[in-house]
Each structure stands twice: as C-alpha cells, then as structure tokens.
Amino acid sequence: MKSLAVEMKSLIDKVLVVRGECPKCQQPLYGYKAKNKDGSERCAPLCMACGYYDMQRKEDRETERIYNDSLKNKTLNFFKFGSVITDKSLFDCSFDNYKIIDVETETAVNITKSFVEAVLSGEPKHLALNGKSGSGKSHLAMAATWEIIKRSDYDKKCLFISYRELLEQIKYSFNDEPLRKEIQGSLMKDIKTADLVVIDDLGSELGGTTYSSSTNFNNDTLNSILEARQNQAIILTTNLTGKEMKNAYGERIVSRLFKNSKGFAFKFVTTADKRLRAV
Image (cartoon, rainbow, N blue to C red):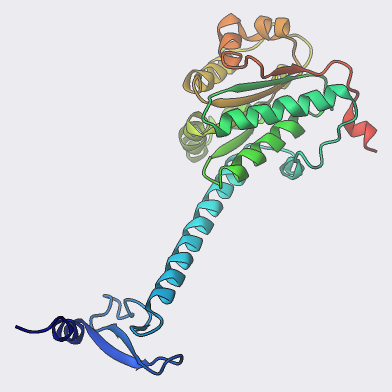
C-alpha cells in the first residue's frame, strides 16, 4: 500500500508543474498544468513550503477589495447619474457642512439623523421636511442620503429627485420616443424600487400662485410613485403647508406621503434663509 506522501506526490505531479523557485525559501513554485481557455494561468505560482497560505489570503483580500470597489462604484453611479437634480452642487451637502444656527436647525438635524438610523435598521420610514425656501431642507435631505449610502457600505441604492424637473423631463419625452422609454421605463422603475428616494421641492411645480390646481398628470405621476413606495423609505421636502398639500393633491396622496412619518415630520418656522445668512 502506498504511503500518503507518495499518493500526494503522485497527485501533485498530475495536476501541478514547477513554475520556478520560491525567492523566500528556494523551494519549488507550483502552478496548474492546465490553463484558462484564454491561455492565462489559473493562479499565481504557489510555494507549498512557506507561502501557500499567505498568498491565498492575499488573493482573497484582493478579490474582496475588487468586489467592494465594484459595489461602491455601481451604487455611486446609480445615485449620481440616476438622480434628477438641476443644481449639482447639492451633491456636496453633508451633515458636516450644514450650519446649525439655532435650536430649530439643531432639532431638524437630530430628527434627520434619527431617520437615517431607522432606514439603516430596515424601517421604511418617511421623513417630511417643511419650510420656506432656504431653510436647509434639501441640504438635510442630501446629507441623510449620503449618510445612508456610506454607512450601508454602499449597499443601499438611493435617488434624489427634483420633482418639478422630473415632471418636465416626462413631459419633454412625450415627443421623443427613446427618451420616453428611458424615463418612463428605466428611471421610473428605479424611483419605485430604490432603497431610498428623495422627492425634493414638492409643490414648486404648481407655480407658487395657487395650491388647488394640480393637474391630473401631476397627481397621477405622484400617486404612482407613492403607491409603489408605501413600504419603502422616502424623504419629502416641500414649501407647502399640510392644508395646501391636501388642496393641491388630495387626501389620498397626502395620506400616503405621511404614512410612515410619525416622529419624522419637521416644519421650519423661525429659521431664516440659511443661504443669505451664509453670505
């Protein structure tokens, strides 16, 4: 009966071939006899005596790094190129550069950070930020989005949607078949299925003169998004009061907007225009 050592040597001779000498211990470096279909080596030559485990761990770490980089890039591309934003400087907004200037802004930050924790723990919460232009609603919405992306290790897919711009793009696509397919197919699908969607500046599409003249097209688009996202995370920013929203969009839509917002609805009352204050 052959010894284990003889059997192992026989197996090695069948599968592996010497590819050189180990620079560390001068023992043979082994590689697979068979190569990949494209003629490349199946793996780097390995030293059975001293380096096998070290090299294996190194390869595993490199594979993990490549995978994580790929996941990160995919998530960032989804966010940056899939979002509908007219002011690209919004991407620079974070909690670090949000100016806390009074008790109200401090409370807004704390509520927004609590929302981030809830979303990261898997809760389909809705954060509603209401107030005049310049109070920092969009800034906080973007800050929360970045926090969720980064703290999920780039696992959560997020979109930031300027609602008025979205409607304009949809309308424009009516006369452009390829664009229509892209927006009403791919973009709307992503908005409905992403882990988090920001609906920014809801109400600005009404023109600021009356809040009782929202079109059927507007309401149908908004209702379609909210219906698909009833149990998914949403951030809503708006200048409208609750009464104005009900007059514009109806009770059903407003109910869906605020369905999961208990403890996560905040209205800026006293905060002045932060953009003017920063000048």
